[in-house]
Amino acid sequence: MENEKTGEVLRVASDEERDQAIIDAGFIPGWIGEGGLRPEPLHDFEPDTWNWETGRALLEAAATSINPRVAERRNIRMANSAAEKRTSLNSIHCSYQMVAPGEFARAHRHTINAGRFILESKGAFTTLEGKKIFMEPNDIILTPNWLWHGLGNENLEAPAFWIDFLDDPLVAALKTIFFEVRDEDYKEMPIKEGSHHHIRWRDLDLQLEDLVPDPNGRYGKRLQLQTPSIPTMRLYIERFDKHMTVNPVKSTANHLFICAEGSGTTKVEDKTFNWQRGDVIAVPSWKLFNHRASINATLLEITDQPVIEALGWYRETTV
Ligand SMILES: [Fe+2]
Image (cartoon, rainbow, N blue to C red; front, side, top):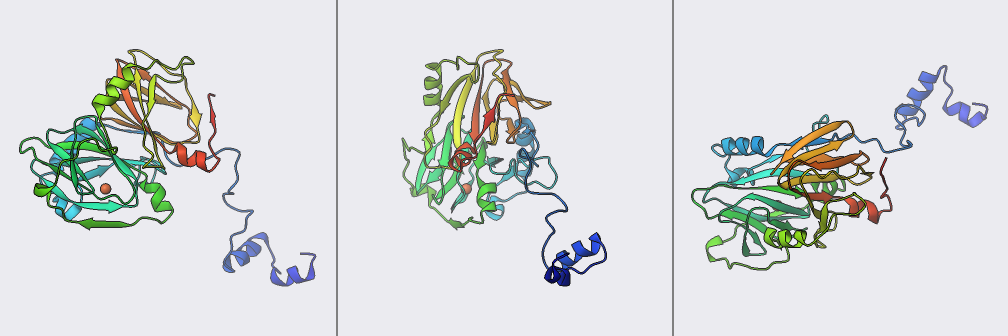
């Protein structure tokens, strides 16, 4: 206020008037409200869980009234329980999806990187670039950025279900989502075997058996999947022996865990989540967490760690 020029612009009688004058001019005073700098990250997503048994029942009920031709996909989003969230975490997300018996949905492509973890399939397929890939339970299919993919179920009795995992919150935040649809002739389409976007459970199962748990107690038998086509997410499959507990860790990466088999618990700070096959656990970044297996169990881990690492912000601690 001592400076003559400053005094002309901000000649006010009180702190409130001064701040209001700054706001009226289209600014926000940096000295009021929430600052951007704090000693550690403050996360507005909560640790959370979604139950497959509940999700399956809801999808079956919804199947009678939702036409996927209209809705594009018949899925339910695992929205975080924190206020006003539509995604599981702030960079990665999961949904349960169902394909009714004999149902086919048109193909689409998007700049979102995604994958599907198959829960139930007796003749369901994903189309990738105009070729059909049939899926078995616990298989993983990757549908990377801008790759055409469709879906269908040739079984006339049994619905198919899977979990979609996506980086759509990140792509949405960066305002880089593009999306297109097209019709495909499934009847004339060739079947593809051995796509590098198709990670078969039977192969993973064999590879896991050859591994040993981390000697430092950090992990069970843990295998990083080769997924260079989805650079925003890294996938691990981790197998635990009955009653195995791994050491707690917290990091600046977000994590989603899908139970592929068995059952156990995940402790995140002061919350404990039980899981069994098909359930999903969301662990926001900078929350201390660890797993414990009740019986022999396997988790699929999806993390945004490669994004955080690429930008130089990856940190982890065990306390
Ligand atoms: Fe998609």
